[in-house]
Length: 114
Length: 113
Image 1 (cartoon, rainbow over the protein chains, first blue to last red):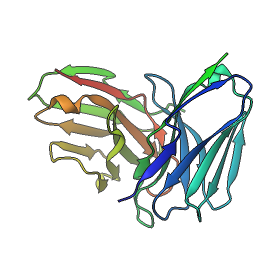
Image 2: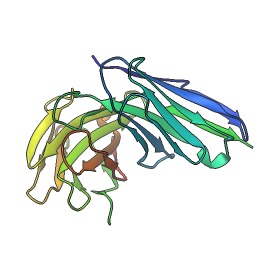
Image 3: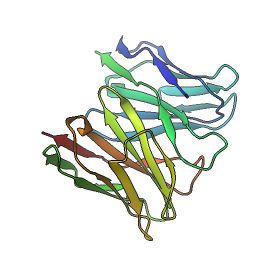
Image 4: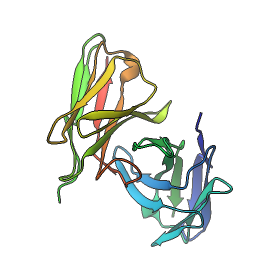
């Protein structure tokens, strides 16, 4: 059974600090997705990583993918309060198949304190 | 371009009743997937429809069903509601099946009492 694990589950950090969220998955997949969810809201797509070694950056967030290690990281640089949200990683649950099934990680609740 | 829309946004039902949720994908998108989000189980895949055909199904009981219409709009139905069905139901649309970015709707918050 495909499993996607994120750590930490909860992250409290101060504004201006850097930190990394880790996403490990248990099966072959060369695509990984990061989403953001604000309380009571839907999922907002942040990054789509399509191959081994892929790195994408948007503002203070940078995501990378190592398919050999089955690991993706989401790095936060100089955090600001607006980044407070829950972050999910997800992988294709039907690798090599023909469907859009996503398997999500547990989520990381990020709270940026002033 | 309008995003994914879901109706209703909030719903309160009683145990044993049935419910139908609706999802309208982004124009031109032919794939619609449904997910259930609960505090205990997180985000779980329910099923995906593409060109009116169910392409994949998650590990949910047969009380959960869905369909897709020729205009790509999709509905999901839950019969004989249980308390544990209380959740946020999200649908996502994609241009086509397989490995394309999915865009999520605002969700339907279902409460079963």
